[in-house]
Amino acid sequence: MKNSNILVIGGTGKTGRKVAERLTNLNQMVRIGSRNESPSFDWGEASTWSAALEGMDKVYITFQPDLAVPGALEAIEGLVKEAKQSGIKKLVLLSGKGEREAELCEQVVIHSGIDYTIVRASWFNQNFSESFFLDPIIAGHVALPKAEAKVPYVDTDDIADVVVASLTDDQHNSQIYELTGPRLLTFPDVIKEISMATGRNIQFTSISLSAYTKMLEEFGVPTDYIWLINYLFSEVLDNEKNSIVTHDIEKVLGRRSKDFSEYVQETVITGVWNQATNKDEKVVA
Ligand SMILES: NC(=O)c1ccc[n+]([C@@H]2O[C@H](COP(=O)([O-])OP(=O)(O)OC[C@H]3O[C@@H](n4cnc5c(N)ncnc54)[C@H](OP(=O)(O)O)[C@@H]3O)[C@@H](O)[C@H]2O)c1
Image (cartoon, rainbow, N blue to C red; front, top):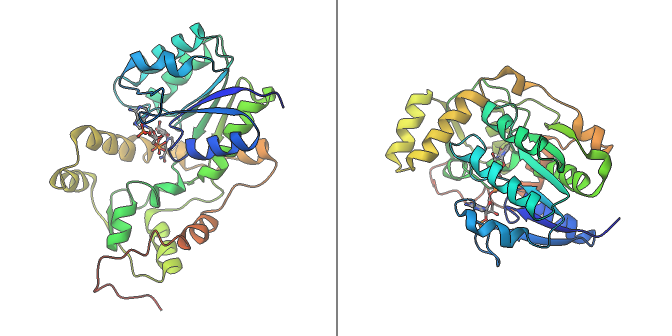
């Protein structure tokens, strides 16, 4: 394998961290793109991009907070333009599953004239242990809308493996991969699995999207974030195309994708779900 200099944007985040680790183990030279590195990379400050791109051959792009937010398209256009000027030879874009705004960003990468791979991912398993669903799980009470929606959650280990293959092997050039896990789960299914594994009695309550939005407002969640949550729960969870299990992980990696229960078994031993604050919570036998 040829050695390359690879910028991993969001390289301390859920997928970026694992991509950076794997690339380093393959003797690739990795630069982390984040606001806390030197040189720093900030999506909100276009003036930081060129220093982060300088001397790099390839880039893994994870946008913050989401390709669907206003301004994302302009940011991706700007970054791709700078990448071209810097002589970048390969772009791998982490995208969502079929949201129109994300597809417009994909088109910018596809028509950049630079070799590319698009990696479209379903919702991550790790949203329940490293992101917005963790706090209610710790509190022992999860209230969410769209309880009936079936999601083929995908593991960030599998995403990272596909991204690394795409960055290091030209056979993945010009491909759009759709990554899902092997099984559809509803929110109540997820909470049941985590309850069983932790031995905790975590409650699930189905609420309307408007009640959820109101609850987030009462908790002082920023308006932009509430907009994004609303978008994700309506556009992503309401789209039946997103409830289809795909087999691209197997196609790329030659092995099956990680099941949600494997993720739960690996995560429960870290203790992240057992910091229960509710002393009255009954323990499941
Ligand atoms: N979560 C999902 O289920 C899911 C599913 C499909 C697609 N995606 C896509 O995956 C991407 C990453 O989302 P994620 O939730 O998994 O986040 P994440 O990668 O865990 O985000 C954290 C990373 O982003 C960096 N970061 C945060 N704000 C930044 C900024 N303004 N400029 C530069 N870097 C910044 C952080 O470093 P610093 O804080 O040090 O800057 C950190 O490295 C998003 O585009 C999302 O749409 C997510």
